[in-house]
Length: 244
Image (cartoon, rainbow, N blue to C red; front, top):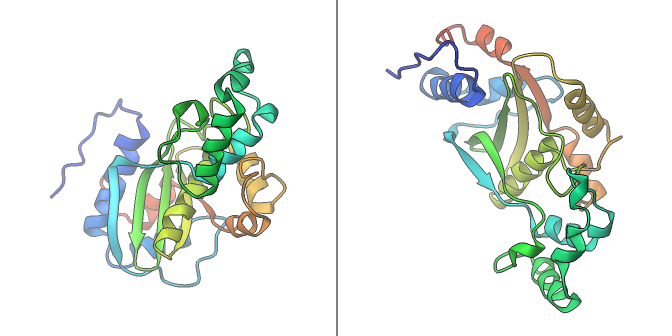
């Protein structure tokens, strides 16, 4: 039996919510718990069973690199980007350097690989999954929040938020194994204003600033893949969960 005893003063979402809850579900949730989890979430419609659980990555964040298409778009549009710290705006041109080196980097990225690209041309780092659930027919990316919130931007782009990055990462992983995908934000409290605005904007298609490098078709696909779910709802649905 797993030990879920926790420091009551600990407010870290990974330690106090994500890891113990999803570890318990893996051991005690039954065969259909991933499908049940999706159907509990607001904002998505899951008609088909996602199948049996194949793997659960929790407790150690899964890292996903940005796509070559994303990195190439940032190089080509560096003159339009705004950094989180406005004092860094001059560094775009400094980092891009000579045009010949930039064109070589773009040729690699346009060819579908970021391997061997100099760090000076990389304006976005990896993103991380708090919990990654792989089932027979789908991948579920869980973003767990307690007293923290979705990051609204990255260092080199004030419009590239955590929701956009993680949903795209889930899509990249799922596409590689030819499966469906979902992103579920599990949260403790009411979403912050900027979080609600991002979720609503991406769902309705009125805000797409986090995905300027993606096609209209892909952005449309993403609109129905964002679910929100409170931890309280999970506890009510699985009353056997340990008190946390």
